[in-house]
Image 1 (cartoon, rainbow, N blue to C red):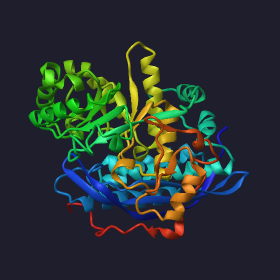
Image 2: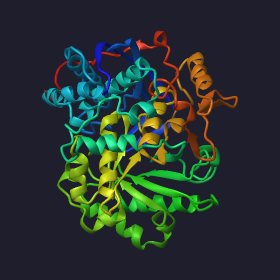
Image 3: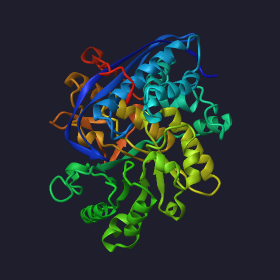
Image 4: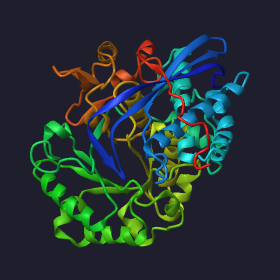
Length: 465
């Protein structure tokens, strides 16, 4: 039986994160954004008090892309999501399992945020970050690691939020997991990134020897095709086997525009280097258009949803539209990732292929990347987007002593080659061995004294009031 806990406190902090290079995706270019840190204190039944932590970037214009909102307003929406979730979680008194605490709050969270004009994807951010910190505290309280704890369903995950599954589907899936010892990095190529020459996509100093590449799309079929042809020509100089994925971040207006791009990939010989190595296309259309647009014959190319994954039934709904995959992101919720991985395994047993991918917009070195990497390794994600190491200079604005503590505790993940502590990449892979430690994939917590409290939203009025 899963251990029960009582939540005693939740505290939020943030730290500025400056990018070493601009990152353009969709309609926004990011040069800096705060990183969130969560600290929770729980009492584990029969075990005493434990403290847990989580971290994630507060990314503008991803969770909420509405054009009428400024980037800062969309970050404020995430801060409000956190504040609302904190109130709901702390109001749940008494002893509960970790998953029961999540399941008892998520509907109220979505509904309350909707009244504040915060969309469902942003609404889920608050519970997602709190849940990770609670799990870290729980694992520490019972003195076990993430992989063993989750295999034994330490959180008490059940099927109440996924009625298409049975409780046994989840427990069987969890019990059968063999965490991957290494996960390949997928190198992100943003819309403003250099393509040719020094610093370009084929420069191993830039791509860290990656064998997987994630290429951002703009939503313009002609412009995207021309850029993909340039990228393919460069990647073919690598002299090694590689695979690519494409990510439109909701920029393709409709099926007609998407069809135009896929026709070019099918027919244009200049695009053969990309088309012949394409694994899947991620979130091509806006989330609301996605729900109304069956893919039809396009489905054969392989599509996944990401931003449209804003509810517990998003994957079954996407499957009905012709999508074969869905992203796992800690910022959308670790329980959702596990439920969706269970679905993919169950559906694939019927003969078709369904899968979960690792996408990594919000992960930075330290807590965030370690917890997301462990989640992916546990559910079987063999390669994952790791753009944090590319767009931020190592640990960024993290104090040197804190970065050094992470490097000392996780020497297979970090190294200092004379330019500060950075991710340590082994022949294109990240190793997961040191994540097998008491707690949620980390032996260290941030220096809480070096963080500032979460900034209050600049306006407490509802968006677009």
